[in-house]
Structures are given as structure tokens and as C-alpha cells.
Length: 143
Image (cartoon, rainbow, N blue to C red; front, side, top):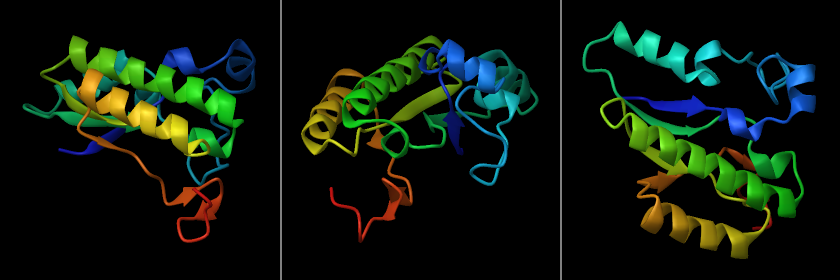
């Protein structure tokens, strides 16, 4: 049962769509190009259909929002992403058995509020913390 990354459609602006067919990704920028199943639920379900009993725990894709947006925007983006993941878990409970929360790690007060909301209200099972925060290792990040 893998953790599966997903980039909710609602998180991508029209300007981002113009830059890349896959939203905020730039192929190769983070050492990988996005796959259609990272942004298209239908495509992901078609792939999952090939493997009987295959389920996933969802989390958001790269880049982490605190690396590319202001603290104010990161708070809103994390909320949108978490709501989108919760909607998928609710809509497809036999496919997506849980989700991990995206937190605005460049605003710790907001991160704690979003953590409470994600666990208590959205029923998420954990949080996602990438290997870097604001482009610094955890040891050096000021969080």
C-alpha cells in the first residue's frame, strides 16, 4: 500500500496551466517529470484497476508549497490541497483509504491550526513533511 502523490486540479491556476500541462511542475526541475496519474484521477483509477485490491494513501506532490509561495498563500494552498484530498478519500474510500495533511510549514501557527483541522475534521491519518523545508534541511530550517 504505497503513499501516492497527487496534485489537486483546483490548486493550479490558469497561468500555471499555460506553463505546463501538469500544473506547477516544470519537467526536470525536481529531478522528475509529472506523470498523468499525478494530476488526473481517472487515469490513476485506470492504473489501479489493473491490480486487484490495490489501495493508496494520498499526499500532495512536489514542490512543497512553503518552498514556492508566501506564508499567506501557503496557508490557503494547504487548505485547498487538504480539502481536495479529503474529497477524494470520501468519494473513493475503497481506493484511497487515507490521506496525509499538507501543512504551511512557513507559518507554524497556521500549520498547527491546519494540523488540527486535518486530523480532527478531515480524519487524516498523518502529515507530510518533505526532506527539506523552505529549501533547507530540517536541521537548518527555522520552523
